[in-house]
Length: 639
Image (tube, rainbow, N blue to C red):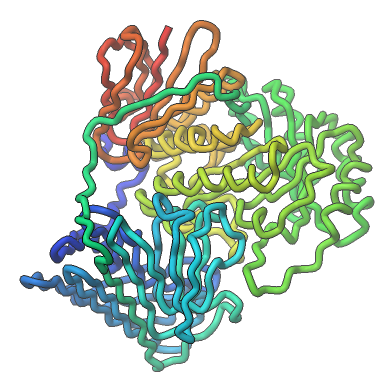
């Protein structure tokens, strides 16, 4: 049977929700699943999204079942009405009646919702997303509940806590002479810097985090919330319509440091598959194994012996990523781990430690759990593992590292991961996360200076959930926030995402970058029912192999004129320069290259997958432009 295009691109036949354009005059928005995104005025994005969302007690998203949808397009307005039904994991149902009105200079989103019985939720109501690009560091006026006006700026570096609270309205300049006011009614709102989670937005949401959660919406009680976005002309300047250039220009800056060594994650629950696939580590050229070790999960001597087997067969250096329970004296707990490491024969190139309680997030307003001072944890690790370079930070995400900043004086490096599907799992949101990832690494450098820096394992799927009791199972292979497996990891989308990640963090010059595990749903090798044959390397394997081959090379910084569509990076090794590009979109993109005409082009694309994905052939390429099909990755070698 011939695989569908959707399956090759995304690893799933699931179709994303259809989008419908709503417009009135120069104001337009996309209606997706009952919510609004990409709200623009004269082609300029004003607000990234206005959404009515319902979260379950673990912050999972309750899907909306929409009925009675109507769209009325009148001469001066477009009006949308619908009913939405949200069901909690325990079966409780929340019924919502919503209306959206779009005018040439205003937009209103109104929602009334009622539960059929007591409904337990972490949050139910509106979230408004302001974009990052062109907004970060720019002036903003915040009106509070008492009518007072706070004049400030949108955060430039990522704020660990809410930059603004008790919000009634937010006003900012969209373009010269045009400002937008977003006004909220019906409850208390506050803003968080969603770049903490690599969301490309500042999120203004209902109900302060300092209030208890989960909380209960009482059976039969109706809540009414409304959002009004108003566009105002404040000067005589004429707004210019934003134009999207068709062809993408590229500029290069050479000798921009070096590219990082590539790491591969190991997990004790993937023992049998990891032993079968250990040969791939040598083929890949990965130099580091990041070995996850958690005594609270039952990991012990057997896990360490497994790590040694993989290390012996691969020749890669070992970093032990070790949780510390912190329930007994630290010297006792870490001493036991050190003894097991010695008995296993495992040789550590480095050790990273983190208290077990730090695997869970502590939101603003919550009480921090009991934990020994990090200085004491690091000192005990040094005593248990003398002469082993020590790393610290968070094994979860930048959010937690930003909120609980680690003392780095005793550390050889600082580390964290990221995840793009904490809040949203649609294709566009996942690829837009690179806008925020740039600011994550920039913020890490602002906090920790030139301290050696390691990132990962970072994957599309969520390895652990710091914000609830567990990650979300995804047996049907859908696009689900906080899912423990994601079908796009297995397809071309995952390959493009992997290269874009490496390109985005390159300016921060991490010394080790880990973007997959060896086996399993986060790994390099296909399982049954995937776009490539079971047991063969997934598309992202080839991207990681290219990155590993370029590690240590003289980095070439690659800038494109449309970084929301195509990103790239490069390196010079010997007399050859290599450029890598990723198409972040489902549309064909054309990239214009300057310089020497003699090049070798290798393309990971849909045609390669259809041909069996068994080999990669470079072809001579002399044209000045390279065409990248949907989610394709290109390698260009220039002698």
